[in-house]
Length: 485
Image (cartoon, rainbow, N blue to C red; front, side):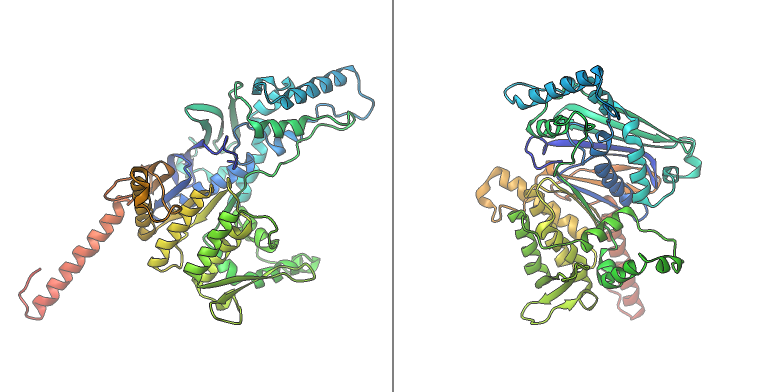
């Protein structure tokens, strides 16, 4: 999911069966993907799986290369002088590099050397990395623990993802686990035509400058995905204590005195690492940086300040309210401030067009009015080229997203009727899925009247209203008022 225009239109379809609480789900990632439903129905499970997929498969590119996968090719691993077969191998590989440099000629996956294609087509080459990432993200010793329930253990879990471009499948991967072990299947369309980004990646990877060094892929600066866990507000408020605790536990005595064996999930650990290593950016996306400023002005009513310690220790984050001369620590700021501070920091210089941002409950700790404003932020990110995935329980947020889609439809018909060019969405850009207990996940189709509102939201509102009417009627009768609504 790169910022490159050639790959920005990729469609990623993800199907899961018997995965955690999820019986079955079939989704495709949109520029804005929304997971709604009751608690403990699998929204976080699926969001975490998407994060693991991105990390395991290099952000799901259109040609399935992987630094982890290909850095271990070692086709010419040897200790002595090269023999004839090695020379032939290197000559063939260098010839391919020369072909990749000829941009006026089409280059397909099938034009790669046989040993490269064989490695990339291997399903098992990714299996260990994918399994390890799942165990890290979910903090489990074995992915068999992710199988939906003991009574479903005979069926096992199955994860399938497919990378499409238009109506064409570029490649796919299937992981299954029945509790006794994992199996994987992989498909690649060998007629994939390399675009400019694909050419650059493979040209750098395969260029043999020294015949005595095994070939290796260098991980390029490409799209990245970031995960904002639901616990981010508490993490920010306890940031200083967590940092000191981590330093203490790096000593032998600190480890010996540690009795808590609870581990962080991979997403929470990555979130913390980004904060601990945060530095003021030198290069950033001006458009996305502007969104961070809007967040500070419209919601926080103040600025987030960073104090970088001279000794290279962890950075400190302060909130300075408007018209105040002193910054406040996170534990002295409101829960809304600690909730939104990481988002401001990431948008200020970390996130770039083409990246994927996964946010659990972006509405957490926000007033309903602020929830509608955070929906505008999500729309601005989509317009800036960032893919966004959210889990939510907020009716206000969904209502506003529905309005933004209606705004996009109005703009499509007549651009002059829209005031803001950055906060609209189109129906095709937004996908919403409802999660159930013991039922398959279902897509919520956009409706011009109801928007993306799940059916049970309306049922809850109706039940509350009917209960209110019944109680008011009963109270009036008890008070001697015969008026009935």
